[in-house]
Image 1 (tube, rainbow, N blue to C red):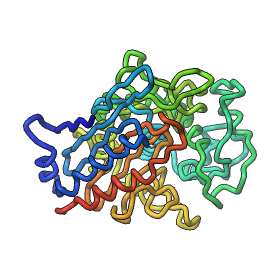
Image 2 (tube, one colour; image 1 turned 90 degrees about the vertical axis):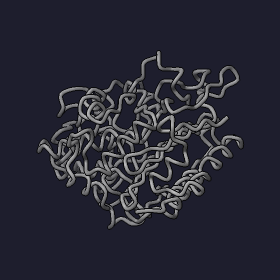
Image 3 (cartoon, rainbow, N blue to C red; image 1 turned 45 degrees about the vertical axis):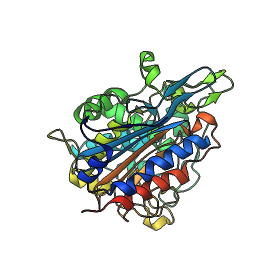
Image 4 (spheres, helix red, strand yellow; image 1 turned 45 degrees about the horizontal axis):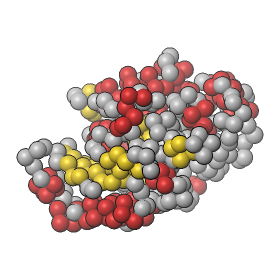
Length: 376
């Protein structure tokens, strides 16, 4: 059963949409589409947040947990395993903060901070951010039973598949290394650096890694793991992140749609939030222009997916300046600076099996939202 939630008790969805300069009749289609996909069994449920002009509309539908034993509703407070959204919501901004304060440069050899890379000075921080470092798309880091130190050392010894900067291959490995760069330069674990320098300033009170077991009823369960005999629930879905203790630069973030909205608003507000300058406007501009134009059809900013990239999930109607990212578990965040709209769509699509694709659903939701923009 769907449960719309207003931003203020006295305001309806329609009134909120009008204040945001969105056509409520068009926007209402988004609820129909989400409800339909829940009824079809594509997803167990969803938590959707649409923001503009500092205001938000939220819609939750279906379940966060839908097993034979338990059924729990998806709500505004539901925490989702954000998977690869971790790359752009945690790792990217923390690296940009280090650039802002002069602690590193994007052109620095990554080996300066990760000696485990040996003499591979051709790999830069920028290569790690743009998936152009030469690493393979995937390596099993969990089956061998490596420690965190052994995982970093193992990545450092891997043979490269291409010369850095000459190709684009989406890989988690660069972001695992970036998470380690962050920990070493901030002098504390990645999760603590995120809490201090990102989540607290932005008011992302529900975001974090390795959620407390007491929060389990609020967490959307991900995939059924045959070897474990249960759905993975409250533990990170990504096995390599799990091998890293649930804290990694490529995956591990748990967050609500509201918290992702706070993060998106910072990007739309030139890096400012709650009266603080979290990131410089210069850093935001650099992150949202293409750094892979010479490697078409790849079209990547620093971390962000840009229009036209093979992983572009923005749909047809968002502007050419739109940027975003997806997560394997069924999550996404998309921002369109031309209209000031952002869309956070959180699902646990792997709950019913990882063969379920939400690519069409994401595109439909983004098209509906973009079509509803009626005022600049």
